[in-house]
Length: 268
Ligand code: ADP
Image 1 (cartoon, rainbow, N blue to C red):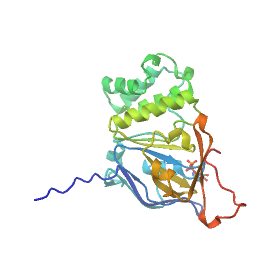
Image 2 (cartoon, rainbow, N blue to C red):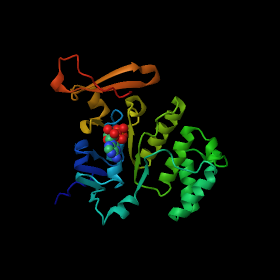
Image 3 (cartoon, helix red, strand yellow):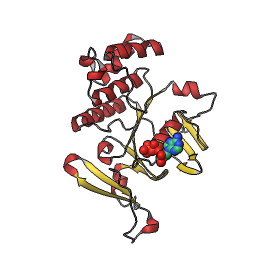
Image 4 (tube, rainbow, N blue to C red):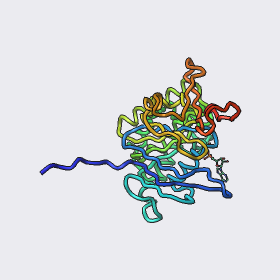
């Protein structure tokens, strides 16, 4: 008898996920699929619906329509608690009390989540903040605050990490630090979903890209698929390759040939 191949379900899958506010769809019929062990770069201009999507994946807001599956199981009121226990996230501004040290903040997380010391130390080492733990968080750079936030999200050793714009506002060294961190996490088998409005900030880290424009997925695939003709509705231009800033412009085929159509740029 032939052994059937083991099919691993996507770590995150959505089916027709939709969110409307006042009759306007800000996330529109989204079918996204994040394979296990990848870094999924979630791209789109500001206001395209990335945060709203991530909040729905985390059950922080309820979809108007459609479904979310995490690790092959539907997110429902009954499964929510258990599923969220295997997800680490960083959604709003980095957490942490500014007047406390990094170590004191991590001790709070340890107590709150009932973790052991080793889990905390591992998370701090993973984000490479072990030499900065006696400093007060108010003296951290933005990049260090983001990394402390990621350490908090990692402490429970989640299999899935959801990060909303962790590189936003960082200097090139800070961006590189986050990139290296995401790569190390993926090597350790953590699936990472990371959003950005700048292609250049995540394209080399992400193995799979999903691109949102006005709440709709206009591309999902690998970076090389994006760079080839298989993505005819996406135009890439590197305005400043030296600084690794690429502009990625969703292009509505209905307006092909017209020059008077405003096209949102990803680096707005
Ligand atoms: P992104 O993360 O890509 O910048 P968001 O998901 O934050 O985009 O926002 C998508 C759109 O939804 C924006 O136009 C935003 O103004 C709108 N939006 C987000 N949250 C709300 C809300 N609670 N009420 C009304 N509109 C909202």
